[in-house]
Length: 342
Ligand SMILES: [Zn+2]
Ligand SMILES: [Zn+2]
Image 1 (cartoon, helix red, strand yellow):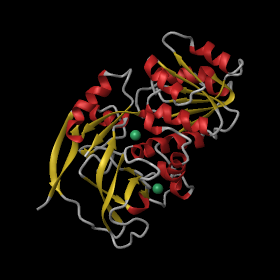
Image 2 (image 1 turned 90 degrees about the horizontal axis):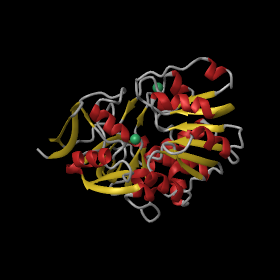
Image 3 (image 1 turned 135 degrees about the vertical axis):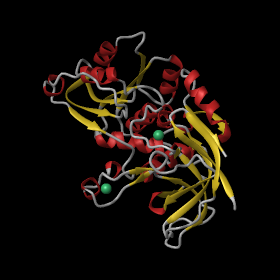
């Protein structure tokens, strides 16, 4: 029997590279992808360390991946064997309240590829055809295509908060999620102040188009936001730091009637007085994954409105995933997106 290598997290801090039988087409809408690149996300590390409260074990991780179509079920018409593709990771049921109202990313019966069902850190991935999008490699490089999923999260964030031209947006954190959200906001005509605690990451954020980038270890966030917004407060706050404290900081700097987007998946509570929401009439948006935003991202990439390639700082062999995790942990100031290569 033919086998393939997969990256399996059996429980927190237990990762192995196993051989399992090759996938076969079982359903008419199955697509099997021969994986070429995968992007490591903070949430993969969260599954590895047990910090992602939404994860299930054991699991083949990986939800940012691209490759060539290897096999398709007979109902699959929009892509063919050999096409270069990216896969969305939201597998929704289509009939619950969230799905009926068009919010597939928070489906009550949601299965996320690489979190609840086996993902793309493997020689092959099997996904459903409605999640598969063709990528024209003349317009988007194979490596850059790995960033489509994280930018889809960025589009979702901006869509949730209805970010538009003239908005003054504050993004906490200059990691991949913060940078993607920032670039999408800038592409929509907003001005963005982004924060971090590492100067190297802030330099990258500036290079990628942030209006302002401040080190909150050295400068007062409150004062920087006051100067940036002429004392109005932030029209939109996007929290990509996701700590118990960052929620409190966001509520502090958001403008009256402003919008606050929460991204964290941690389970550690924050102690928040109710008046923090009511006094300023704050609109809070929980956002998760993306709701069919891949086509919009592919357009942004093709038109050059964002520069995802600038995020790719490292590429490792997929068998070196534990080394890649160490790089992400130990070189926080200079690492941004680490790709695995098959
Ligand atoms: Zn991710
Ligand atoms: Zn549903």
